[in-house]
Length: 238
Length: 310
Image (cartoon, rainbow over all chains, first blue to last red; front, top):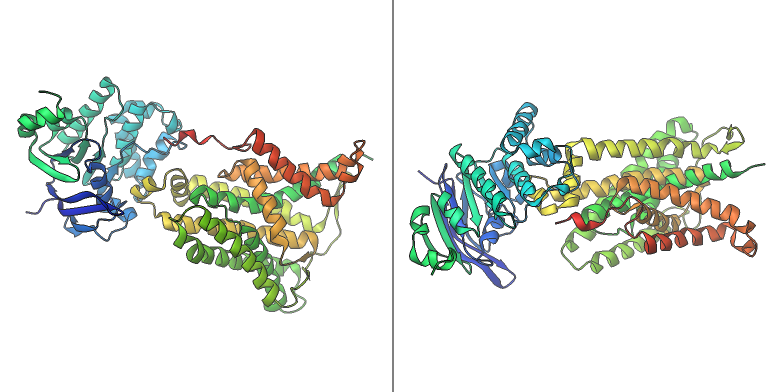
């Protein structure tokens, strides 16, 4: 059986500077895979390439049996790959509800869209309470909820979350991580990029450690969580 | 006799025409952050498109009741073709170039379009007569509305309503808002941003074309240079209203039209200002207003500060 997402020897460059230097990994349906590593390791670049915002200079991306290398960004979401970007990037001058509707931009099943909007409100009640408010007025954590809810509106086969806990208070971070765990238990396949390695690895089935554009270590979430070098480098222990 | 109501109506009509053209500046700027300085010429080619339909497509003596709708269609077809062509061949190749490159391209395109009409349109070396709607002027109280201005009175609010509905209520309109606020994220939602950019140019050209027809009906003649000053005024209106905001474009146009009209009507009554009241000073007052707005409210009347782009 082939995996839902297969990345093979992926290379991405900004001009002459190679930011991702030939990485390979897989995401099987139903699992949570995490990429961890410091700033500048190439995690965000990898996700932006998978969703078509950046073009790779080499390697293969196969999603659900199809190559994504030549697919323009705006067609990738319709294949079932949704991306909640780093920094959240909600549409600040639109209402929360319109933000969610944009997540369903390519769907035309009205009843289904309404049902999924309701589901987003069930998952994040605060969004339901403020549905008519401009999204730019939300707090950072609430914007993160909206970004995740919006990505889910496309009914993705694979949900990519880039730094969902970035800049959040510890309580809000816990809330977001609990939501990811809940999505996982509902069977959502997730590719999670995180600087908070502890939280990400405890959730993940598989993890990959990235350093300056390469994957230097891979394993199950639990193995990496207990790996000596990971503990030293990313979990702040000596 | 109190002529203030008349002056206000004159300003409103002139301003509605500015507003129709300003929509194109503001939409294109909102989506691609480009000041399309060739937009005044898109307005001008629209007017010539309408004239072409009247002179060379319809049989002689067609009544305006039949001709006008077809002239509007002709104006829109020509203006949209020019605008979409400009986007495809002049601006898109420069999408990732430094900002100055497309700006200079726009100025060059503006001159090229003026000269093309001058060189190739029959008898367009000077002003060309534009067909008029028959019937006398209308009187409401002591306010007179010229027949040619009736078109503006209808076209401007209808255009604005159609545009507002499109942007707020349709899926493409929401995609347009998303592209204006965050193009990369719009792509992640499945919005084809290249297509949205083309639609923004085309919509702007549509309203400019309607403005071009209005100009011909209002002044009775059109010429290859008509888009220059009017384009600058419409750009001023867009900035005045808050560039990027479609309602701001219309409101900015009306404010500018009224300010300009009142200035040329009344400023000569102020002692010492007698010689600044003529029509030729109206343009000066319009740009003085622009400078004042840029000094004291640079985001425009309806503009928002751009701090919310986190």
